[in-house]
Length: 343
Image (cartoon, rainbow, N blue to C red; front, side, top):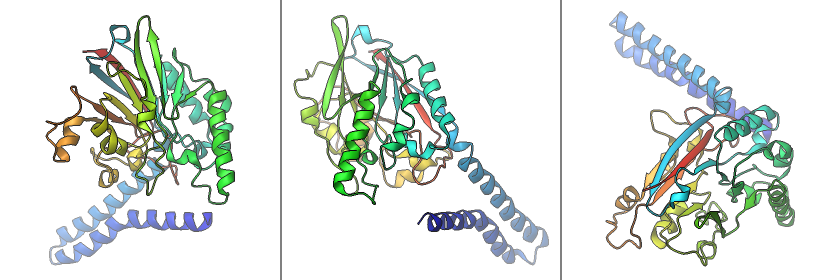
């Protein structure tokens, strides 16, 4: 299977690289009566192939380890004065199995996260590709993540080991347990449809975490948002950690007043160019910051009957790791830094 996979990968890459040259040569025959145009079209195709080859080579090598720090300033009237300036660093989609032979990259991510001097680190799912052992080999490194209020995490679709096709259901469930135990040994607070209050004197904010809440067809739907919010005052500023950004449209906007949701999952398809990604064909919200008004208008809803009184926001991280192949171009490995401000 791996041999076939890599053969197909090489075939696809070769096709993508050679396609501009083939198109250029084909079009050049339309201008064969005009020698300069004939030559120019051919060489344009060749140049495009060379540039494509360089871009792909970068994406397969340096691009997959080109870490970027994305800062966001988030203001809201419910944020208590004591949390004004509070810094949350979000990591997502680490897919540690991708870096089994490159531990130095994992160490560099940890170093850059700690350099942000976060008050809180949140991880929004997909720590592994297919088995807990991928994370276990990095236990010492992951244990060096430091924040004043620690690390909080949720489960992503890969963390349920559905892609371990060689294992029985019982084996997969056992491995899920090992992954959860690993996170707890690291001191991470794993939120399984629950919330935690963070206090600064008499002030507090809530971090809500749900298990993966996908579409129920392609990705598991274990999230229980009502349970996670049980007993939480509507006047408490809340941040929701939910791996799949489609959860925002499907349930969060319709059923809650949660001001801020942090998600991952899409990877921005590991490729972004001039603000566009093939991920946009699948996900309405695939990378960056989204305001509720944009989402509601896209759904044909004016918001007049919305069950809320203030703006809500979704931030989608492009993640750290890769799935299937270690490739990133434009959609670089990302460390998200969110600074809260009282409005």
